[in-house]
Amino acid sequence: MKKELCSVAKNFTFSIDVDKKLALFDISGSIAHVQMLVKQKIIKNHDGKKIISGLKKIRDEIRNNSFVFKENDEDIHTAIERRLNELVGSVAGKMHTARSRNDQVVLDEKLYLKNVMPEIENAISSLQSVLVDKADAYFDICIPEFTHFQPAQPVLFSHHLLAFVEMFERDKQRIQDCLKRVDICPLGACACAGTSFPVDPEFVAQKLTFQQVFRNSIDAVSDRDFILETLAVNAMLMLHLSRMAEELIIWHNPLIGFVELPDEFCTGSSIMPQKKNPDVLELIRGKTSTIIGNLTGMFTLIKALPLSYNRDLQEDKRFLFESCEISHLSLILMAEIMKGTKINREKMENACHYGYIEATDIAEFLSGKGIPFRQAHHIVAKIVGFACEKGVRLFELKDTELKKLGIDDDTINFIKNLDVHKSIHLKRSPGSTGIKQVKEEVKRWKNILK
Ligand code: ARG
Image (cartoon, rainbow, N blue to C red; front, side, top):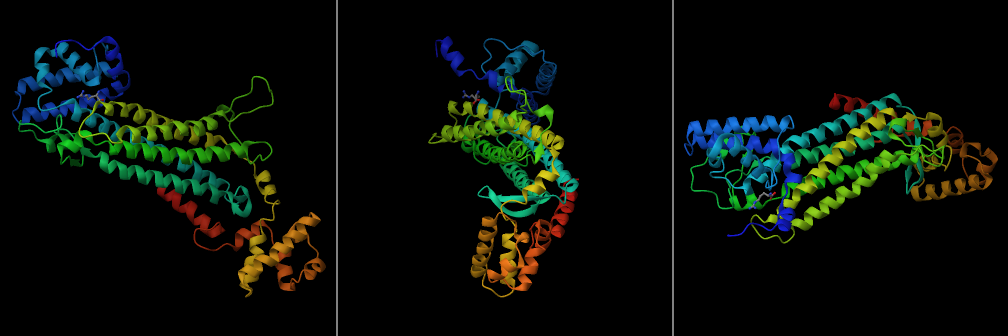
């Protein structure tokens, strides 16, 4: 090529603003690569030493923020090589022997993920711990569990909190699983065909703590499944956070008042002095859309992309960094918010008095006596309909009224003694809201998370 890239095209193609985040990973990768080149006698020992000492200087500059980016630094790889040249001279040019930016960039991204995904996993564990501690501290509070967002059945508040702990556990499992595919070192694939130099990809992989080495150079430079998976894992994690945020927002509404959110994570209104708005939670909910958008963006980027490396792939980093950063921060914030959230026992237990949420227990009692469940359901529907018309709760119905509805003495006695606590005590199936079951779960989670 005879001419330089035109300046508008330059701005359009440069990625330094985004990929400078990879600087330290890029340097680690380069050091391992140069060590391999020396070991394999591809470059001389003293050249290797010079290059590595230069790379270490650059690492310091990056760490103490004194690295100066220049106008022609297209991406982080070229910026570091340019600086290396300034520091150690033309020997810097030997660093890129038997390597291409195509395998280098995949390596950097994988090193980034090997670093950031465990941090996200830890943040999930911290949030789980807060939830389990709350479940323990408020173990016996009853709330109406909703289905169709209508009062359904009484449950322990702790049982409800542990539902979130379960879903976050799956997120951690998904992180672990997708890290298996991140853990394949691509270095040595070079541009797409490998190299005529006697490289040792196994050595580099070990230095950089990768479990495996790529098996196909074309796949190694064109594969971005590991980013898709990461984005999908992040998207699901954020979905979970958005569901939790939504419930807290609803619970914080004074009409419901199950909780009061901590001041430090709420804002006032510029016009309505009484307001305490759950902005942070709203933004966790809102930013979930960005994460889902990034996943869609990444799918669209890869769709129908021919093998092997294409410059389109450069766009993957925007999605990747943004998604990881948002989900990590959201987790940290959610844990803090949950920690500082005040639980209103009275409001929760009062809410159990609406909606006849013990009705299912009567139907189960009747069918326990041999009445087919469908029929029992029908009978209880009649009782509830009657109580509803009178505007009383089930235990307030008079014996005579229940008798008129065809209810026997035994069942009347059951209804009279039925309240939400009794309802919960009756639950004994595995995984239910029964006292014993939930107590064991709290204990189990405490053990897992300690
Ligand atoms: N900045 C590029 C990226 O992120 C690095 C690889 C460039 N490779 C190339 N053949 N131009 O994908």
